[in-house]
Image 1 (cartoon, rainbow over the protein chains, first blue to last red):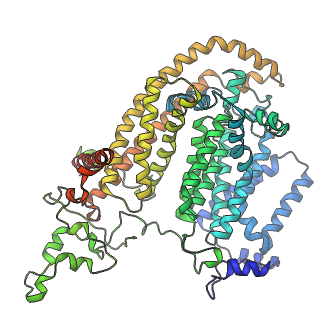
Image 2 (image 1 turned 45 degrees about the vertical axis):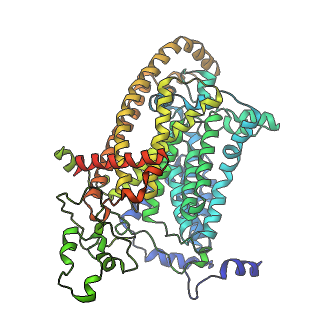
Length: 417
Length: 217
């Protein structure tokens, strides 16, 4: 086993590189020493302050026995302190916070919960998208479509986060898993907060009860998944969704949010398979609406939430991917995005393509003689192999050459090609 | 016009560079435009669609293609592509407002028709409840539902307008930048021998570019 691991994963490891190495120590003192010397930035104070306050809220409001709660949080704290487990568990703090809040949501008293909306989602859906897309897709059902819808919604959704995490850890650059845990955890956490603050009924409610008023005494419904229970002679989804923690949590759809987040991370790490990941998200969207679990507007809220958090993570945390490398151990260094260098609007005068036309026209020395005279301007500009044929040197530019034009290149900044 | 072009946002929410804003705008809009593809699936499910719905869904699919090319180019933008995007986005903003007005009318007309049926639904709900005195207050009131419907719709339209200005600002910056001068040789392109859609696509990009240069520079 060790030999196979070495052959497959460590054969390309650069000599002396330790960026992909993992902590193997069990010594708590190492973590305590790090903690003593730790100076948090403002961002980190906000991050830990936010997650810590939600954890504290969960600790107080969860109705489990105090001794169990103390035992659970102590175990979690211990995992955070042992270097071997800390490298995974501590980075998954946003995920633990989300799970804590999600499983406590069921116990909030109805008296403090906001009122359940029944009409808002179908109304917004019709106003923004022309019709209730869930109605359109669930108009006709059959066993084949039921199974097709069940695969992403009832199966893949629950296993995919772990599979994605494992693949990213093995085949993505070092630290990408940290970014995934951050983005995935925050997306779900914000999603559950929104579901609690803005309770809304899913499409199955409209089918069962029309647009009549809802209350917190009602049980959830498996929607179209009841047909799967019947088809497979099981009682899995009916019992699970009837006792769901957030029954009126249609908005946003975390099924959609999770699928989008997984697709975004996979597209980032393995761009050549992007069409496959886009297909998966579209498949899950269809199944979600077909099974009458969400309106399209819920799916959009989940996906947009994922997309925005992913972009934030990409530009602030994620390591750059080198698609020519095989796995995490093949990397010799970890680089992150430079927001300024990646900015296509930043340009330097060092780059010939950014030199204003007027400057270049006068820069060619007309007093050249002999062979030098035969050197064409394009040769002067293109001899540098890094430069493509410059648009600025062309006289075929789309009716711009005669325009009064005064470009202002940004000084002191570098362009990233 | 000059006033408009000089007052466009120069950053995304005053913090992030413009290109990150454009990446978010195109991504978010692209996700929303997928609604068109799902709406068209009505062809297979047998759900009836009226003319306005067809128009809205087909237009969404068209814009999906236009915006997708921008997302692929965001780090190496082409002025012609982004000119086309900003022009289509502006037309899309106007059409979205019109569609929103139309579909709002449709929803409220439908809702008033179903009000009669709601009496039976409400009694069905009453039979299912577990709690006692408080259940009446746990569901949202009519006004609460209306207020949230209006808020969500208005917020999405306001964001759309802001996104429109953000895209226009990005194209304005591209127009002012020497690196993105448009360089296209009609003879090299050999458009006469290309498929008519390709020809139409390039012509629309050039026309959009002219409009942008006229409005934004």
